[in-house]
Every structure is written in structure tokens, then in C-alpha cells.
Amino acid sequence: KNEVEQSPQNLTAQEGEFITINCSYSVGISALHWLQQHPGGGIVSLFMLSSGKKKHGRLIATINIQEKHSSLHITASHPRDSAVYICAVRSVYGGSQGNLIFGKGTKLSVKP
Amino acid sequence: SQTIHQWPATLVQPVGSPLSLECTVEGTSNPNLYWYRQAAGRGLQLLFYSVGIGQISSEVPQNLSASRPQDRQFILSSKKLLLSDSGFYLCAWSGGFPFGANVLTFGAGSRLTVL
Image (cartoon, rainbow over all chains, first blue to last red; front, side):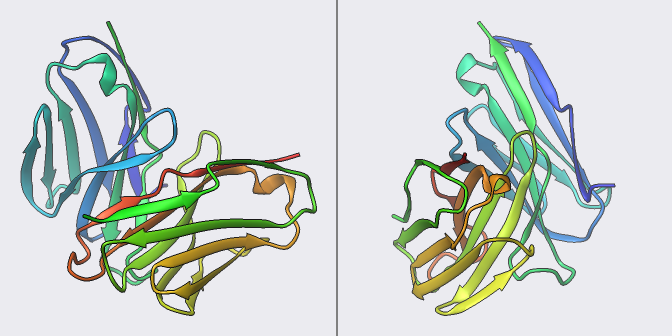
């Protein structure tokens, strides 16, 4: 079983829809990152969370440390939001210093 | 502001040829540097990380090596490429002064095709 699981794997939405992407993890963490990878391959860091909720524009990220779960929400989705969204956690237990454990990503396609 | 440069963006190499991918970082000092590989349809796999000049840790036994000759330079190399080395390679940095571990920045990536 992967230490970081994302759902769904693929998601197709109509423009304007509210979108939720989920991330569950099984290790103790010090932080969780949400990343966005566009078709060209470049990765952009959207959020870094250790508790609570963060909002940036139409993007909202939440984390529940007790339940080991995080969600990324996109309000009023737009075709330019089409990308792969990746959840990554920074484990507190050993492993590579500063290493992140990555989910396999959720491929989002927003249709006009 | 901090930036990260990674090159080349795309390359096609024959099996058995050498490889050199380079990554440089600006705007921070003493960052942690990482090389990741992303195979088609799979998640990011950590290949190497470095916490300082000349300090390299390898995560996965493979045909590749990494070097950090300067504080903000990270190089991924191979003496003889294999077909299985094909993939998308990403350099990243985190930590460093004055940002701390919260910052995570990726390069634009290098797409390698070995024929």
C-alpha cells in the first residue's frame, strides 16, 4: 500500500464546477504540499500545510492531521486549471533528510 | 526572488552514450537539492539529494550518479545510458537561507529519451 494515496486518479469536470481532490497518508508528517504539474511537465508548488486551511485565489487546501487527510478544492473551475495535481508529504520518521513522499497525482481535465 | 534553472529541456540519446543534466539555483544559499525522475504514468521517484557541497545521498541503485561541485549547482550524470533511463527528470530545492524547509521549488524538467 502506498504511503500517500490520492483520489480520484482522473477527473473530468465542466467549466465552473467545484472540484475536490483528496489525499490520504499513513505516516506521521511535518508538512503536506500540493503541487500542480502542467502538460509541459513543470511543477509548481501551490500550498504547504501543516494544519488548518489555506486559500489562494480559487484554490483552497485543508488538512486534518488526526484523520491524516487533506483536500484540494478548486472553485469556479476553468480549462486552464487542467493539470495533474500531486500531493506530497514530508515524513517525520527517518528517511532521506528533507525527502518527500509523493502521491501518484490526480489528472484534472476541465472542459469548456 | 529565487529561481531554478535546469537544462537541457529535451534530449534524445543513444543507448550507451553519456548523460549530463545540470541544475543551478539562484536567490538562496545552502539549499537542499534533489533529483527526481518521473516515468510515464508514475509518481515522482527521488534519485539523489544533497545537503551541501560534495554531499550526495543516493536513494535508488541505478545507472546514474550525481555531483554538487558548488553550493547551488547539482549535476546528474551517467557514463552509459540504458533504455530504462528514459523519463522526465526534475531538479528541486528546498530549505536554504533565508527560506527554510517550507519552500519547495522545482525546475522545468528535462525529458530524456534513450533509443
